[in-house]
Image (cartoon, rainbow, N blue to C red; front, side):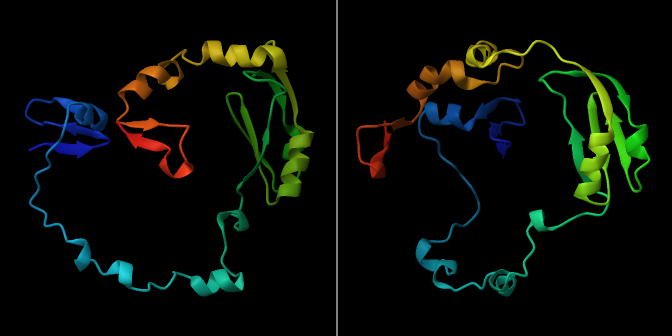
Length: 187
């Protein structure tokens, strides 16, 4: 019996593993299962009115979204360097730590402030004295070329250099000369 997990199908006896795309490219795939599938005519959810959870709170404006909530002593502000890939050389946090309710957190080159409210956190970040070693930054003219040249560096997961290969192998093709309702076509 095969198992499907994390976007792959694996044979536990042989440890062979295939992605769904590889299986699709190999041709038709037959799925065998002991689960009984219901015919669409037997499905009832489509014909049933389901009340919205907490609908009254949404309508009356009492519902709280994550942006409305505030955790006590939450991280409120972050000290940011003036450039990308900067390294923190020194930090004097004594003035910020004298502000009531403020705690300065440092983890390597990361510096954050925990405070009872946003105003106090911003005041504490302004009181921090940091010295950064900032490498030369690319100009606006050089930025696109730098990003393009280094996009496939490192882990190699960036698919931008393999676009043509991916489009050719895709079972669905993009067609730009058709009405918007049929932009995707089967090959």
